[in-house]
Length: 132
Image 1: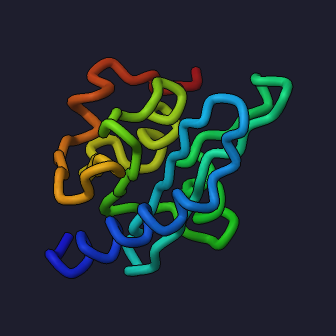
Image 2 (image 1 turned 45 degrees about the vertical axis):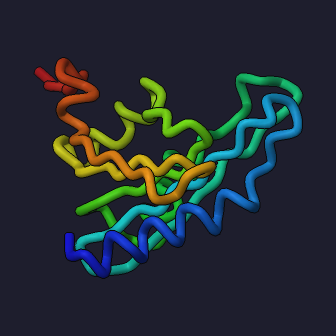
């Protein structure tokens, strides 16, 4: 991932965070996923009164990319107040497509604070389906 791509991802994650629908938690999250093709797919969290129906920003971005025909990813930026890392469900979904994805975690309250981690660090024992 180039410096230019990093900056584009961060800007896209911060932008889409503003469109999150989080009336219950008040915890808005924006995600920008870089496909191998160079395309950027974004997603934001969308909550629901039936909490189990809520979708995280990371999964929304992955699903949008897959729907557009992309399945190989080279980077992800997350814009989250406080700079939190992805939940376990999102980690597993991301690992399906890029088991060592670089992730830029941006503190949305202080956008100059960016921490880079790798998905393999966040999900060291990921589930892998091996059919018999």
